[in-house]
Length: 213
Length: 125
Image (cartoon, rainbow over all chains, first blue to last red; front, side, top):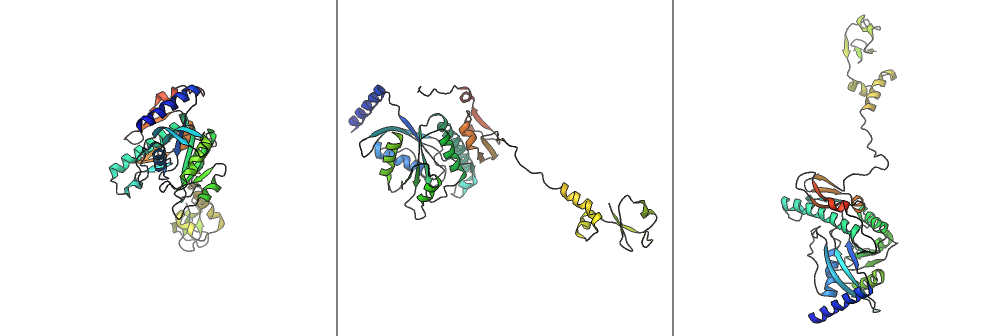
């Protein structure tokens, strides 16, 4: 298995060097607790067999951007893309340590978490400016998509002319409304999925090959 | 500051010297000082309301309208330790990179090199 994977990677690198094909770096952005790391883990698990990061119900679990390189995704028509996935900390306009206290965290840990989360947002925005070629903007389909941070982020992504797929996550929940997200951002493709259950995940891979390829 | 005759209730403005001679109505020589707040709740003739209205206008808080083109300077504002306000647009557009938020109130670290680093050329990796 390992020999096969190594050979595949070497061949892929050789071909990319030969054809000078640039590998796309796809950032997973979105507000906290939308399921960004769950999606990154699922993509990485499905195509490389490895995980990317830890997930938790407490917001701002991911406080540093995590990169998983050389993920090769094949569409149903045989077309293929090789990408780096960058799982980023949740973007928000306000971080308050008091929000973490209700999860049973002590004040000192909550203050440290808030500080790290703030640094994480700054880092996420830095990578968006410098290093990202495409964006998967992740939204919780049970939440209101018209939040200021979403409108602002989509505007920033559009102004940078980056291709974007909006992922409407958590469609397994009864309150989910992907249609609300579609009507909020009609100018971009919206793929409703459930990262947790893997529902519609194949549709997302198809869209990724089509959109980022 | 107005004064009111204790006998008939007629009011006189502060600078009127007549009160030294006595009330014009009843000739009384006892007057009581009436504070502005008390006057504002009483029914009074129109001329005596003017100073109250003026004072009320003066205590209105100034309007906090930002001038056109105003942009907050900071990309991260530390409201208190552990509470932060983030200016996403500023972060997306400015070249500086915040690498760490300090422990003290209002302090954060910025990567100075990121500000002076030349922009990457599109075709160059």
